[in-house]
Length: 328
Image 1 (cartoon, one colour):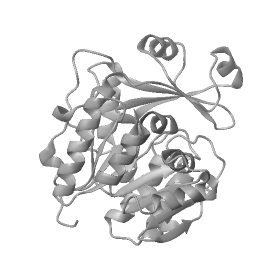
Image 2 (cartoon, helix red, strand yellow):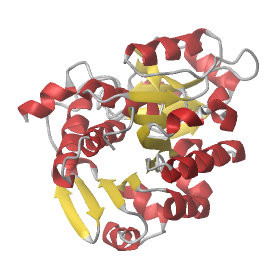
Image 3 (cartoon, rainbow, N blue to C red):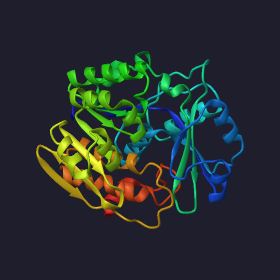
Image 4 (tube, helix red, strand yellow):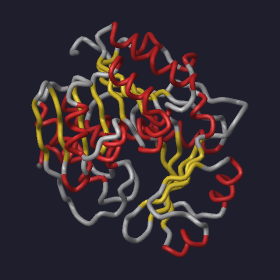
């Protein structure tokens, strides 16, 4: 791994996260179920965007969040994802580049507008999301520079992109090419509803092309329709080389070669916004993994990053994650 040029290349939805502080009455007025994620069309996205006052706009999407976290920790990362040449497309490009990430995907001149996730944060720190995927889901093999992939230590794939055939083919081709060249492949399951739509193909991808799996408790239960978390753990043990399972305040569990590593959660203050907690856990874990730390240490890195990010608004840490890890 030390001979590779890049630490990580992430492929995922290129989404602008638009964080908006609201009270409960806003959710009721707009018929939004608290804590849910709703897919919306372009017209609804424009209506909600223009009718809200954003507290923060950043480059987002699960894989982009993880890449940004890695860069904060001192690792290197490139991101591949589709945006359009419009206002939010330029917001995404400028913001992801400011993190230090390489981003060379061309901005589209035609077609659907840039994707966005309107994240409504209530005073209890719960997030309710309305997501317009826009042109991000149209990613295909032509968007991927395969010569760069083979120079990375890790390829990180975001499950949210798994709904369309062209993106699926791009994922599979990228994973196959990477593994042929000694590049580890990591997959984040991303969302329980995504799993419900694609359960069998996710299972096949995981068992044939993935080295490292990231999933939360509900996602891993849904993947194999297990009756409980313990049952899900039994199911996944022999399916991939390394499984990293997060459980919120209950910590996380790492499975590798028949061994289990239990990691506690870290609390750094009042929870403000849970956006990106899983993504930043992956950042911390993979930073440790890239730097040849043992799995227990990797898990602690992940838990520290996740415990910190929920104490602020948005998924871009305002503090040095590297310093936070050193202090803890």
